[in-house]
Length: 332
Image 1 (cartoon, rainbow, N blue to C red):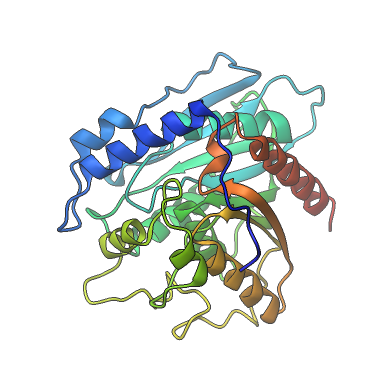
Image 2: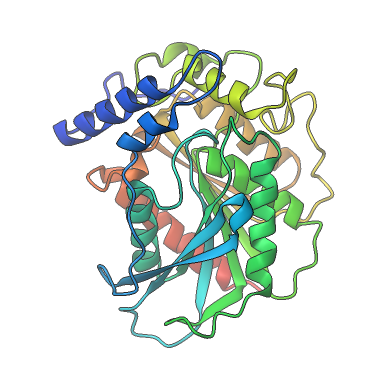
């Protein structure tokens, strides 16, 4: 594990927000790996879509499958000076497969910022949650949404979308989801979508062993081994362990991707994230499989830092995503 600072530097505002989030999560989870969603929803503030631009971005909610509560929020920048078609970032939110939603306020702010500052259309996908819906429901919802987008006409929207420049992105559990959806997409022939890259922001991976970062980083914000153990139990089918291929993607039950045309990957890792060793193993696994992968590390970043605009690293990550989208979009 790379050397990290000994003290996490956070503003008082971020500390208070993290404390409220942690309190709400602790109050909602149960020892039998179920959730009190009524309690959880008190602490998960939602944001409505707004066709009227907010900070230069309009947003629209589009239903995919009401029976599965599948829908997405499309963010279209309106302050752009160009009339050219925009690249598309298809984003999967984090939350351990059990928490949050596409309209959670923190993700609404993040996706709105991504759309504005990267000059891209952002499609934030809402999918079914564990423990009510376990693996592989989330992956099925993600891939089915991809097929829906591929067949959809966007002529009525305020910006032109170029599905030939699509990027699959996600944070934490959404980063895990983005990997598996991208892998499944490699086996499918789309009519319009062409995936130009994968953006994995502190993706949620794991395994049966305890890594150095999981042992060492105790008491850091949002993530602990007790919490991630709960999430994996809530997500995985009964009888599965953390070496399941959904969790430990390059572990003993890994799927060989060496022969798959997997997209170029941009991977973000934080120095105060207990999951960082698993993320670095993901980086090594992609490299060993012959895939293009770019690792970006922020030594003072905790898990979920990008959802806090006050964090200095949150601006850095937006810039890296913008550069990656521009570079990959320019390739044939």
